[in-house]
Length: 338
Ligand SMILES: Nc1ncnc2c1ncn2[C@@H]1O[C@H](COP(=O)(O)OP(=O)(O)OP(=O)(O)O)[C@@H](O)[C@H]1O
Image (cartoon, rainbow, N blue to C red):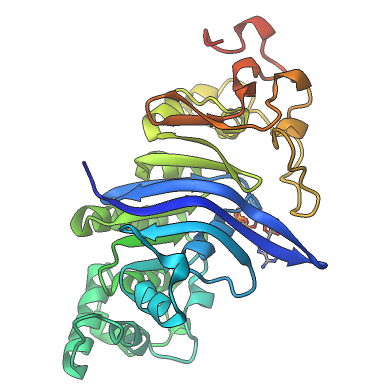
């Protein structure tokens, strides 16, 4: 069995809006194992980035409660110095937008070198340069010696994202958090970057948290998937179970809103409404209920729990048992599951 690298227990991240705190991540518990990609999916505004930033301790004004255990050690108690060491070495993050992640005034080589300075073993100046060039080579950058001397604006979007990945993997992190790593890229580059992440998982035995709203990317990359809605995890399962037997109404709605080979002749489902803003979020009962108004209110739990409906497959709220799409006949709504 693969070792547990990260254990997130009852994590709650709240932001202050007009004198009050509102939780953007609300009681989230998850684990990430070595050599595993855990995907976190959900619409914009459901709390994915707030979760990732909390894990990396990158929020400076949020209130964070709960535990984040890295190999059993609670990092929420770490001093700023300890967090900095952890961030550069054991845990690192690939950010959504390479242009904001890179310093426009610094040469690529210097930016990689800066991260290598944090390395446990430390490198001499010459070794740092060699290591930086080998990292650029590893992420598939042609003429790495030349790129080492360039500035971010001289590179294409795909190359910049590769540089961001090179920086993230510079110190062989055990946990890598990739927040929408391919959103800004075109399809060909996207698939090259995903291949690269897959290689890293295999070669470094790393645990990867992949945050995305792209279900195609999830199907291709993930071992397990956590579906997030309004700050909560509503379903977690092995990737095959999640795509093969999705249960929560939100998961089913997300999957039905994406075209695939079977949906060519059928209508795609449009999820009604939007993710509510933090301030307007109803926190009592099933948070998804306002978006499925055709489902009888009585089928929702008062305080929805995550239920293990089969080994390692968890679903929040029992409403999944009675869910159907408006254009489905009520009697064949659950494909035989009731
Ligand atoms: N610093 C902040 N202060 C106040 N509210 C915030 C802050 N950061 C995020 N939020 C709010 O928290 C909620 C979750 O935001 P978050 O960015 O985590 O969503 P997301 O799922 O990552 O969306 P996207 O896919 O667009 O990045 C949103 O309602 C957002 O407006």
